[in-house]
Structures are given as C-alpha cells and as structure tokens.
Length: 167
Ligand SMILES: [Cu+2]
Image 1: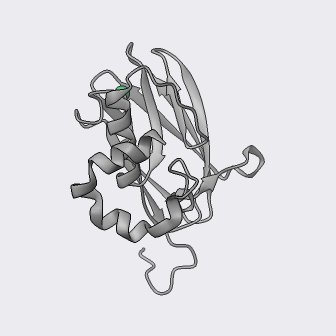
Image 2: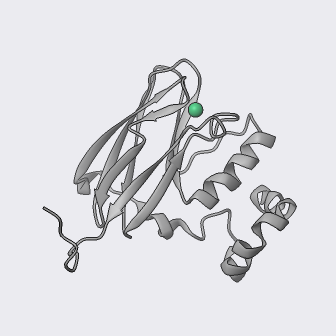
C-alpha cells in the first residue's frame, strides 16, 4: 500500500508507466510484474551458481551477470563490507519505486523471494528462475546506496536462439 501512495506522489514521472500497468495493481504490493523478471526458483532445479560480492564502496562484484532463459540461478551473495547491504532483483522501475519507499522508511524490514538483506560479513542466497530473455536489474536499496551506484544487471539470453549464435 505504501508503494502506491509513493507512486501517487511521483505521479508526474510515472504517469506513462502507471497507465500501461492499467488495473493490474488492484490488490497488489508490487507483485503484479514479478513474472517480468522471472519467478522464485527451487533449489533442486538450480542450473548455475553465481557469486556476488557487496562492498562498502557501494558496488556489486560482478556488476553484470549473464545467464540463459530458463535457467534457475543460485546467487550466493556475500556482504564483505561492514554496512548493511542488500541484493534485490527487479525491473528498473520497481527498484526505483522501492528505493523511494526505503528512503522514507529507512527502518523498514522487507523480505521477498527476489531479495536478500545482509548485515556486514554475512552471506545468503537468492534462487531465481529466469523465465524471460532480456535484462533484469538488481540493486541495493539501502538509503543512499542506489544513488551511489550500487546496482547491476543480469542479461538473460534467449534460448534456442534463431540464427543469433556467435562463435
Ligand atoms: Cu548497499
């Protein structure tokens, strides 16, 4: 619900997007477009493990990750800094919206299958099934971190590509 009131206050910037989203948001909490980035994955179906490091330099290492459509990826996320960081998968639009909510509610604790929040020195994981080709963004939504450039992207290659093979 908070996401919606924030969205309303950003109406000028978001008008176009909200219009596109139509009535989809009715009972939601930002979940309407989950399948735009894929769906939560099952541990038993993991096809690839990717290690992601989060640092107090406000960076993800690596900042760009390549997977293939249909893969279930285990992101082994490590916070090698001392500050709290998080790894959140989403569309750029969702991430920006969520970040605005976090700025206004810095104490907000949130937990969803598409994210992991870690205190300094901790590790955790997110298992995600990439169902569509394209780009899936990720970011740290802790106040100030996203603005400082703590973001990256997963490029999801189309499987069974028609003629776009490169060797
Ligand atoms: Cu961070």
